[in-house]
Length: 393
Image 1 (cartoon, rainbow, N blue to C red):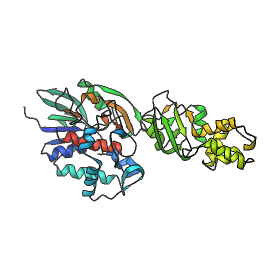
Image 2 (cartoon, rainbow, N blue to C red):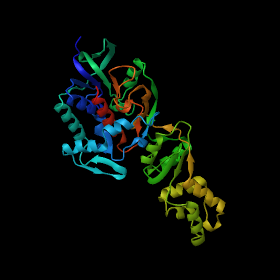
Image 3 (cartoon, one colour):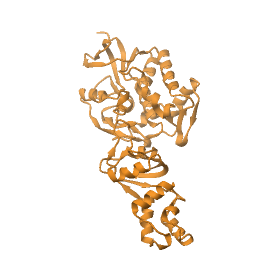
């Protein structure tokens, strides 16, 4: 039986479109399908609508996986420089924000349009609003029943993403397909996601809602120093989103609201030189005023600095430099930027992304147990894993 297609790719996000482009360039007959009405919704909403499309520093240490070495091969095959070259080929203006994060000057839609143009050039057949009802493997071919009819292919690529942001169509489809073919799936959890808190701490967060501060946040031997944001639901901001990928239920996080300052020494100096000052006034020299008030109130420390023993100053300093707090949980997949966990990397080739025990079946992008840090790393994994698979499908 002759297949209709050489390759069928399910999922037309960042990884799926990149794979389709590369396979099409090799002369493969490709059908790229997605269940969503619009192609690339996650790209469109990313980076505040400007798409943080890569990070120039992307390396293995920026990724979380049960196998930390797995991502190295794909990242080497297609680097941030390679994606920048593609962006520049399409004359898309871009800029670097802090920490190597690259964004479009104008709109994320430019990245989507670029990918669609490249797909067209590579003769990729693309259909949105297409659901897959059934997949079978027989006589060396994949047989798909879809809402657009039946189709067969030699290679099948699963690029369906994770569970994050269900409102734009996230689903467990990719994990179900892996299990159908007896491929293990590492337990999934929301990642790059804000924390929620129990009643007392939640009340403090709500009182400070909208306040942002540069903070260092630590959990499970990982530390990130970036912005922290108080919200009416808990804590958010880049440092919190980053550490959430390393947090497990029941873990404490440790927050340093003044990473540049030894607050105990600072308070002792203020006590000597400005003894009549109240502690919240002193702290407001290194912290936003509302936060300084909140910390003093929570620790129940009032009066003049001159009247406070060093033991009390030490307790106050710890509340600033070394605040231990236990989140109740996270906001979940609803607001998570990515999914931690996924298709077990032990089951697929790091060079080709093909399943080791199921010929012609490939897994790329977020559906795989590779989770990047915040700041363009997850897009780079999508491009790199899509490219790697595209050379072999």
